[in-house]
Length: 326
Image 1: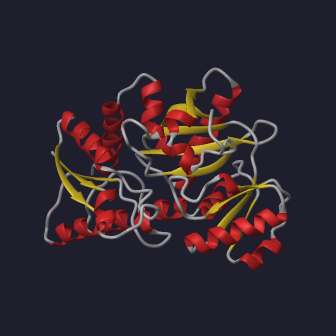
Image 2: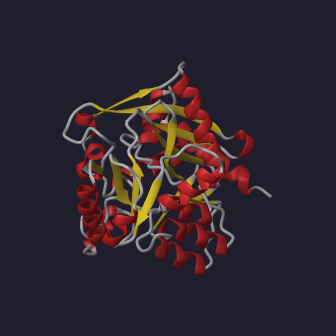
């Protein structure tokens, strides 16, 4: 059985002249080697294909595999994570994780929140700011939380994201629009506990791997799981599984319902944060979850729950193969 690895290697883009900020979401060699090693130990013959353009050339040339293990981020546009899934579907090539619609939908955080809200699931009230002039029309009371509408890996989320007044909102929105060239999501700030929920499987077989609380224990950005906190997670962050309390059960319910509402497949991670009365609210879904075997959230919670990284990769591959079977 042959599996092709589709990925965006950070070093390749840096060598091509991309800035460090532009490649923040991309994977390093350690992540690719970790996934490659797990698949090999599970008995798969792996082929490293790389970015979407490389995959396109090989598919056009007639190459096919039993499965494409997709963890590409894409480069351009708010539908960039949908590009490889769409390419695989064009060539009838089985692949892991979500389809193009879900990948595009979930990268746009405002669009995802609209779907979640329409399904009756809790999410913070929000507005979308397209230009600095739109700030005057935002009808939400501070404190507010502000971030780019279509970025991952907490890109653009800093200590400035939490704003306490209208002047701060205007300044932060203007800065983010200029820096990222895209709309800005403004949400009512949720002051409670933050959890992330790992899910694997499809349909009725989808199940929660674990509910993990993210505790910011050090540093100067304690209000959220910012990009700096993720980068310096060893010093700044503490992770613990949540079980045997109401938060765990309610988080499981909301995360699974969100997973299905958004059309996630094979595996994903759903991020939640509690409001002032303790209700977990949807933040965002990650249908292409980070899979660094040491520092990514889904592998961390899998390890804390007593399972190996190889087991996690096996669950994802088995779900994809079962879904793709005739």
